[in-house]
Image 1 (spheres, rainbow, N blue to C red):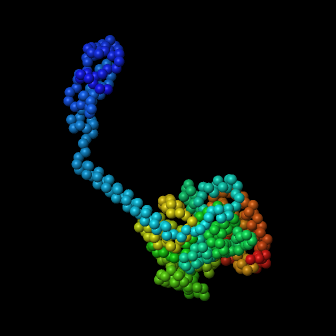
Image 2 (cartoon, helix red, strand yellow):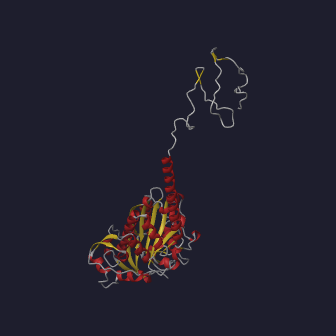
Image 3 (cartoon, one colour):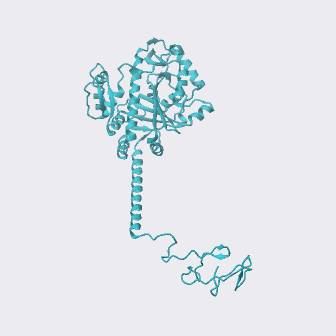
Length: 451
């Protein structure tokens, strides 16, 4: 309120001047006019007052420096220090933005599959199962035997791994689907074949549909890699430490009747071949690690190879979690042309944020209960005994669902496998150690396969 003639305006009903009668009957002297500093745009500064026992509190006084009471004026040195801190923060933010932009541009080079979610097969699952699976991110990982020709839409998948991430705990589980597993190919003619044939028939779309249909999964995304991707990733991370047996070293070196794995991978990737001096503990380079993951002709056959592949991936994850930003950036830069995926840049960066949080809980191979048989022109196949039982155990392993009941689709496929091969749940052989798998019998069976 404005002041006139040096006097303060008073609320209506107050006495205009002179002695002021208090509520207790006493009197107060009129407030003294303050001289000196004044409010901007007003006649004079109002002094803060409070009513305490009928007396005016005059403890608050102007600060001679013009600052608020109790606050010291910042020195020139302090102001300069604050400016430096702000400048450093701005530089850091700018560098982070440039790094993200650089990574984003590199990610744009990745081959984006033409997969469409509406083209994928997903079984009719009950509401309880759908709710459970919604808490997980399930991804199909394909290792292609296409000799690094840059074609990610064809070729047999040398490695098929289902990666399941618990969205809450970030716990990761991996399951290798043995590539020779006899399954429904999800084709219009209802044909059955080895699991790795699905990718060559219809690329990632059919391979994912095959997994969903036979295993009651809801996979909609995939990552495909070739020889170069694995070799380059291992090299950029400084190699991985592995214990190699004499038998494995001999096969990797090409000292047996089988192919020269190290030499072949070196030729495909354009890298140097470094052969091993027998068995022992080695820090494997990219070529050696890729060759190790491809070994098949040892005890355990393809079961042991699937275990080797999961071991290499596990080692890579461990090293990647300890790598610095510069190394991870180099990996992204190098692998953009060696990987195909359905994930967008935003989704990839979103997953990368949780890299340090991911914990690999366990890995295994599928099917758990199995046998082998020569199924007509399909050759030697791994037979789920039976598929229903194996899918029950798969959901227990991945999602801790102890009472899972497979869909009608899986039940029907399981019955067809039994009819085509003659193998049922009673013929199953389950072993916990892949080295024991060579004891599994292999029989010739008459197949009704028309393919």
